[in-house]
Length: 479
Image (cartoon, rainbow, N blue to C red; front, side, top):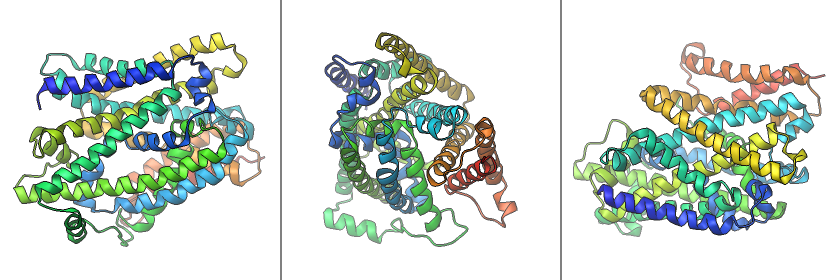
């Protein structure tokens, strides 16, 4: 696919987003930016959250991982269901009862200022690194496909990439993002369906043959029971459950959209419908992965050493499935990346304004000015972090940084669990020390788990251990 065609597609794509932003941000104030005046249609929120929860990393990694891990990822997806049920039935009633804008305000009421600021800080740290990592990958794809052949440096590419997000989010915030995410989710799901259909047609498979072929393939195994295997069912299922609770229910980014619904009942309808659709979308991603490997095997195409490169290789570089598939792959990777990045930028702005700048005691004119500069500041911070990733130029180091950022969700899990399931107060000034120590201990355990635990290797269940250590630390601090 030529750079000119790619530029045209991206240009039209962002033009549509900017038009949506223009109409949805009319008369916007800070209440609009933060929670869309609590007037967002639940069905739009539910559909848009699909795109926000599936990043560009997921878009290429889940299909690529099928070669080594088969359909084992679906065990984690099944774990999402009780996790989302807990969010809808326990966390959402709490957030709506307290009328929260930032969910970390709960920690202030429950424990005190130090716990509150610690929880908000861990979110800011994790979401900044995570958003920068995803945008780095998207910028890298755009650089290789568009900007490098035109002689445009990487740093200018990053400015354009982040600048486009800033332009369509700086005024309308969450209200605009709910509508743009709906459009981006449409492109993401369309790209997924069209890719499956086109690959199936290349393999001469109808609908019934497609289902049967995938079921009978070597890739379709879902359940794994070996205890020391990282794909073990119980590890994956419970990890999925707690990942859903922490990375959705305790994450300002995704919960901010839920808090924009008119009332608790509509927010719960949003959450239950979202999780059902998410299960089918992930199953489709796994099906796509199986088809990609079967296609490569049939056509004698060498599978890249990095499984993440298989889907881009076939869709873009080799154009194995035609121009239409290449166009929709580009739209899918762009939509999945920006649907998660735009809401991340809005939620970072919201959390910093509410949790650190005492917004509730300021006049609207002051709020607008502060929000503008904070939003711009986080855009610049993402720019700097992306340049750091580029300067490192070491994939293992970058992945390690991204993985380390995930450890910061453990303290959030411990804080909220202790707050919800006990009535004890704690010595608030020592809470930050507990929340810093827990992920450090977990990281050390993960490095030496095979030596310390007879060959056992930790996987995603480390999140639960991280939260448990925080819980025990808080228990030691109880008054």
